[in-house]
Amino acid sequence: MDLYIYYKVKDSDAASLLAAVVPMQAALAQHHGVTGQLKRRPDTREDVQTWMEVYPSVPEGFAAALHDAVAEAGVDQFTTGLRHTEIFMDVVPCA
Image 1 (cartoon, rainbow, N blue to C red):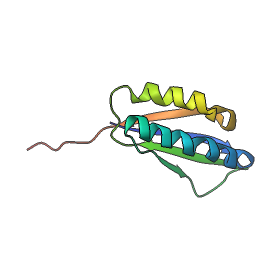
Image 2 (tube, helix red, strand yellow; image 1 turned 45 degrees about the vertical axis):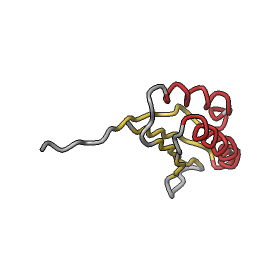
Image 3 (cartoon, rainbow, N blue to C red; image 1 turned 30 degrees about the vertical axis):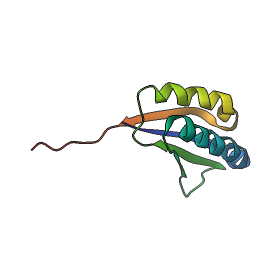
Image 4 (cartoon, rainbow, N blue to C red; image 1 turned 90 degrees about the vertical axis):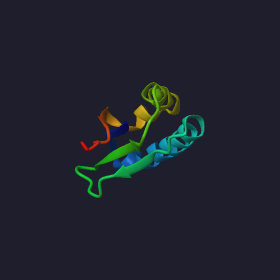
């Protein structure tokens, strides 16, 4: 199972958000063995960016650990609106 979390951030808060998310992802990698990726759309609309965190092949319970890590890092104070989580799984072709 892979997690894709996207959210909005004001241009003025982007540097602060980056400073919160990078160490949060490093701690998650160290404690849970999941190396997160951080991405953003190339365009900015009305001084707002769209960012995405990607966590591939997460173990059972990782979503709860991520929720706690986001709260501990204070990520939500730099975002506009909600974090949206999408869950995807690998497609296994039939033999």
